[in-house]
Amino acid sequence: MNNVFAIAGHETRRIFVSPLAWAVLGIAQLIFGYIFAGAVVQYVSQSSMADTSVGVSDYVGSGLYGSATIILLLLMPLMTMRAFAEERKSGTLTLLFSAPVSLIEIVLGKFLGVMVFVLALIGLLALMPAALLPVVNLDLGRLAAGLFGLLLLTMSFTACGLFISSLTREPTIAAVGSFAALLVIWLLKMPASFDSAWAPLFDYLSLISHYQELITGLFDSADVAYYLLFTALFLWLTVLRLDMERN
Image (cartoon, rainbow, N blue to C red; front, side, top):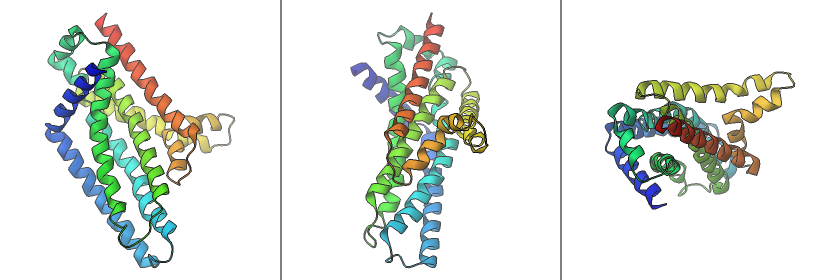
Protein backbone atom coordinates (compact mmCIF):
# COMPACT_ATOMS: atom_id res chain seq x y z
CA MET A 1 0.00 0.00 0.00
CA ASN A 2 2.95 2.35 0.50
CA ASN A 3 3.57 2.31 -3.24
CA VAL A 4 -0.08 3.08 -3.92
CA PHE A 5 -0.03 6.10 -1.61
CA ALA A 6 3.29 7.27 -3.05
CA ILE A 7 1.88 7.19 -6.60
CA ALA A 8 -1.36 8.79 -5.39
CA GLY A 9 0.61 11.58 -3.74
CA HIS A 10 2.62 12.18 -6.91
CA GLU A 11 -0.55 12.21 -9.02
CA THR A 12 -2.26 14.61 -6.61
CA ARG A 13 0.67 17.00 -6.74
CA ARG A 14 0.74 16.80 -10.52
CA ILE A 15 -2.96 17.63 -10.67
CA PHE A 16 -2.84 20.58 -8.30
CA VAL A 17 0.23 22.19 -9.86
CA SER A 18 -1.61 22.22 -13.17
CA PRO A 19 -3.57 25.38 -14.08
CA LEU A 20 -6.22 23.06 -15.53
CA ALA A 21 -7.16 21.72 -12.08
CA TRP A 22 -7.65 25.19 -10.62
CA ALA A 23 -9.54 26.31 -13.71
CA VAL A 24 -11.86 23.30 -13.40
CA LEU A 25 -12.38 23.99 -9.68
CA GLY A 26 -13.09 27.65 -10.31
CA ILE A 27 -15.45 27.07 -13.22
CA ALA A 28 -17.26 24.28 -11.39
CA GLN A 29 -17.78 26.39 -8.26
CA LEU A 30 -18.97 29.32 -10.35
CA ILE A 31 -21.56 27.14 -12.08
CA PHE A 32 -22.59 25.38 -8.86
CA GLY A 33 -22.89 28.72 -7.07
CA TYR A 34 -25.08 30.12 -9.82
CA ILE A 35 -27.37 27.07 -9.73
CA PHE A 36 -27.51 27.13 -5.92
CA ALA A 37 -28.29 30.84 -5.74
CA GLY A 38 -30.97 30.46 -8.39
CA ALA A 39 -32.57 27.56 -6.53
CA VAL A 40 -32.62 29.52 -3.26
CA VAL A 41 -34.16 32.59 -4.91
CA GLN A 42 -36.80 30.47 -6.64
CA TYR A 43 -37.68 28.65 -3.42
CA VAL A 44 -37.99 31.86 -1.42
CA SER A 45 -40.16 33.44 -4.10
CA GLN A 46 -42.53 30.46 -4.12
CA SER A 47 -42.91 29.72 -0.44
CA SER A 48 -41.68 30.61 3.02
CA MET A 49 -38.47 28.76 3.96
CA ALA A 50 -39.90 28.27 7.45
CA ASP A 51 -42.79 26.18 6.22
CA THR A 52 -40.98 22.90 5.71
CA SER A 53 -37.41 21.79 6.20
CA VAL A 54 -37.66 18.75 3.93
CA GLY A 55 -38.86 20.94 1.08
CA VAL A 56 -35.73 23.09 1.30
CA SER A 57 -33.45 20.06 1.23
CA ASP A 58 -35.28 18.59 -1.74
CA TYR A 59 -35.67 21.77 -3.76
CA VAL A 60 -32.26 23.33 -3.11
CA GLY A 61 -29.92 20.48 -2.16
CA SER A 62 -31.20 17.75 -4.46
CA GLY A 63 -31.64 20.21 -7.31
CA LEU A 64 -28.02 21.31 -6.95
CA TYR A 65 -26.68 17.76 -6.80
CA GLY A 66 -28.77 16.71 -9.78
CA SER A 67 -27.32 19.52 -11.86
CA ALA A 68 -23.84 18.67 -10.57
CA THR A 69 -23.99 15.25 -12.24
CA ILE A 70 -24.13 16.86 -15.68
CA ILE A 71 -21.33 19.31 -14.89
CA LEU A 72 -19.11 16.51 -13.57
CA LEU A 73 -19.87 14.42 -16.66
CA LEU A 74 -18.36 17.25 -18.70
CA LEU A 75 -15.42 18.02 -16.40
CA MET A 76 -14.12 14.65 -15.21
CA PRO A 77 -12.79 13.56 -18.65
CA LEU A 78 -10.56 16.64 -18.48
CA MET A 79 -9.14 15.49 -15.13
CA THR A 80 -8.42 11.92 -16.25
CA MET A 81 -7.21 12.54 -19.80
CA ARG A 82 -3.56 13.05 -18.78
CA ALA A 83 -3.31 10.08 -16.41
CA PHE A 84 -1.74 7.64 -18.86
CA ALA A 85 -1.97 9.37 -22.24
CA GLU A 86 0.47 12.11 -21.30
CA GLU A 87 2.78 9.63 -19.55
CA ARG A 88 2.89 7.60 -22.75
CA LYS A 89 3.39 10.66 -24.93
CA SER A 90 6.28 11.98 -22.82
CA GLY A 91 7.89 8.55 -22.47
CA THR A 92 7.62 8.42 -18.67
CA LEU A 93 5.20 5.49 -18.79
CA THR A 94 8.11 3.20 -19.70
CA LEU A 95 9.98 4.41 -16.62
CA LEU A 96 6.90 3.76 -14.51
CA PHE A 97 6.72 0.20 -15.86
CA SER A 98 10.34 -0.37 -14.88
CA ALA A 99 9.77 0.79 -11.29
CA PRO A 100 9.40 -1.89 -8.57
CA VAL A 101 5.62 -1.51 -8.40
CA SER A 102 2.81 -3.64 -9.76
CA LEU A 103 0.36 -2.48 -12.40
CA ILE A 104 -2.44 -2.72 -9.84
CA GLU A 105 -0.55 -0.32 -7.58
CA ILE A 106 0.02 2.06 -10.47
CA VAL A 107 -3.66 2.11 -11.45
CA LEU A 108 -4.92 2.40 -7.87
CA GLY A 109 -2.42 5.18 -7.19
CA LYS A 110 -3.56 7.14 -10.23
CA PHE A 111 -7.19 6.56 -9.26
CA LEU A 112 -6.71 7.74 -5.67
CA GLY A 113 -4.78 10.78 -6.88
CA VAL A 114 -7.72 11.91 -9.01
CA MET A 115 -10.16 11.11 -6.21
CA VAL A 116 -8.36 13.57 -3.91
CA PHE A 117 -9.29 16.26 -6.42
CA VAL A 118 -12.84 14.88 -6.54
CA LEU A 119 -13.13 15.04 -2.75
CA ALA A 120 -12.05 18.68 -2.82
CA LEU A 121 -14.65 19.42 -5.49
CA ILE A 122 -17.46 17.62 -3.66
CA GLY A 123 -16.41 19.13 -0.33
CA LEU A 124 -16.77 22.64 -1.75
CA LEU A 125 -20.10 21.63 -3.25
CA ALA A 126 -21.34 20.39 0.14
CA LEU A 127 -20.63 23.78 1.73
CA MET A 128 -23.33 25.48 -0.33
CA PRO A 129 -26.40 23.81 1.23
CA ALA A 130 -24.58 23.92 4.59
CA ALA A 131 -24.64 27.71 4.34
CA LEU A 132 -28.41 27.54 4.94
CA LEU A 133 -28.07 25.79 8.31
CA PRO A 134 -28.17 29.02 10.36
CA VAL A 135 -31.59 29.92 8.93
CA VAL A 136 -33.32 26.58 8.27
CA ASN A 137 -33.31 22.97 9.49
CA LEU A 138 -32.09 20.86 6.61
CA ASP A 139 -32.66 17.14 6.13
CA LEU A 140 -29.00 16.23 6.53
CA GLY A 141 -29.61 12.54 5.85
CA ARG A 142 -31.14 13.33 2.49
CA LEU A 143 -28.28 15.66 1.57
CA ALA A 144 -25.68 13.14 2.76
CA ALA A 145 -27.22 10.41 0.58
CA GLY A 146 -27.08 12.75 -2.41
CA LEU A 147 -23.45 13.61 -1.76
CA PHE A 148 -22.53 9.96 -1.25
CA GLY A 149 -24.22 9.05 -4.51
CA LEU A 150 -22.39 11.88 -6.25
CA LEU A 151 -19.10 10.52 -4.92
CA LEU A 152 -19.90 7.03 -6.21
CA LEU A 153 -20.94 8.42 -9.59
CA THR A 154 -17.72 10.42 -9.87
CA MET A 155 -15.71 7.33 -8.94
CA SER A 156 -17.27 5.63 -11.95
CA PHE A 157 -16.42 8.62 -14.17
CA THR A 158 -12.81 8.50 -12.96
CA ALA A 159 -12.35 4.76 -13.50
CA CYS A 160 -13.77 4.94 -17.03
CA GLY A 161 -11.62 7.99 -17.80
CA LEU A 162 -8.46 6.21 -16.66
CA PHE A 163 -9.25 3.27 -18.92
CA ILE A 164 -9.80 5.48 -21.96
CA SER A 165 -6.59 7.39 -21.15
CA SER A 166 -4.70 4.07 -21.12
CA LEU A 167 -5.76 3.45 -24.73
CA THR A 168 -4.14 6.47 -26.37
CA ARG A 169 -1.16 8.81 -26.28
CA GLU A 170 -3.15 11.99 -26.93
CA PRO A 171 -4.84 13.57 -23.86
CA THR A 172 -7.37 15.38 -26.04
CA ILE A 173 -8.49 12.13 -27.63
CA ALA A 174 -8.69 10.57 -24.17
CA ALA A 175 -10.95 13.39 -22.96
CA VAL A 176 -13.29 13.15 -25.96
CA GLY A 177 -13.34 9.35 -25.78
CA SER A 178 -14.09 9.36 -22.05
CA PHE A 179 -16.95 11.81 -22.47
CA ALA A 180 -18.39 9.80 -25.35
CA ALA A 181 -18.20 6.50 -23.46
CA LEU A 182 -19.75 7.94 -20.30
CA LEU A 183 -22.48 9.69 -22.28
CA VAL A 184 -23.44 6.48 -24.07
CA ILE A 185 -23.69 4.58 -20.78
CA TRP A 186 -25.61 7.50 -19.27
CA LEU A 187 -28.09 7.59 -22.18
CA LEU A 188 -28.96 3.92 -21.78
CA LYS A 189 -31.71 5.43 -19.64
CA MET A 190 -33.51 6.45 -22.83
CA PRO A 191 -34.18 2.96 -24.31
CA ALA A 192 -35.09 1.88 -20.78
CA SER A 193 -38.24 4.00 -21.13
CA PHE A 194 -39.42 2.00 -24.14
CA ASP A 195 -41.87 -0.84 -23.86
CA SER A 196 -39.36 -3.62 -24.41
CA ALA A 197 -38.17 -6.79 -22.73
CA TRP A 198 -34.70 -5.21 -22.63
CA ALA A 199 -35.89 -2.08 -20.82
CA PRO A 200 -35.01 -3.33 -17.29
CA LEU A 201 -31.49 -4.24 -18.44
CA PHE A 202 -30.90 -0.82 -20.02
CA ASP A 203 -32.27 0.85 -16.90
CA TYR A 204 -29.89 -1.13 -14.68
CA LEU A 205 -26.85 -0.43 -16.86
CA SER A 206 -27.46 3.32 -17.05
CA LEU A 207 -25.16 5.39 -14.84
CA ILE A 208 -27.81 7.91 -13.88
CA SER A 209 -30.59 5.44 -12.99
CA HIS A 210 -28.94 4.39 -9.73
CA TYR A 211 -28.24 7.96 -8.67
CA GLN A 212 -31.89 8.97 -8.99
CA GLU A 213 -32.68 6.85 -5.94
CA LEU A 214 -29.81 8.19 -3.83
CA ILE A 215 -30.58 11.82 -4.60
CA THR A 216 -34.04 11.38 -3.09
CA GLY A 217 -32.52 10.01 0.12
CA LEU A 218 -33.30 6.33 -0.62
CA PHE A 219 -30.20 4.29 0.17
CA ASP A 220 -30.19 0.97 -1.67
CA SER A 221 -27.21 -1.38 -1.42
CA ALA A 222 -27.87 -2.49 -5.02
CA ASP A 223 -27.17 1.04 -6.27
CA VAL A 224 -23.96 1.22 -4.25
CA ALA A 225 -22.90 -2.21 -5.53
CA TYR A 226 -23.49 -1.09 -9.13
CA TYR A 227 -21.13 1.86 -8.83
CA LEU A 228 -18.48 -0.15 -6.99
CA LEU A 229 -18.62 -2.92 -9.61
CA PHE A 230 -18.54 -0.37 -12.44
CA THR A 231 -15.46 1.26 -10.92
CA ALA A 232 -13.73 -2.06 -10.27
CA LEU A 233 -14.46 -3.26 -13.82
CA PHE A 234 -12.84 -0.27 -15.52
CA LEU A 235 -9.87 -0.26 -13.16
CA TRP A 236 -9.36 -3.94 -13.96
CA LEU A 237 -9.63 -3.21 -17.70
CA THR A 238 -7.01 -0.50 -17.26
CA VAL A 239 -4.65 -2.97 -15.58
CA LEU A 240 -5.19 -5.44 -18.44
CA ARG A 241 -4.50 -2.75 -21.04
CA LEU A 242 -1.26 -1.71 -19.36
CA ASP A 243 -0.21 -5.33 -18.97
CA MET A 244 -0.63 -5.84 -22.73
CA GLU A 245 1.58 -2.80 -23.38
CA ARG A 246 4.27 -3.77 -20.90
CA ASN A 247 4.54 -7.26 -22.35
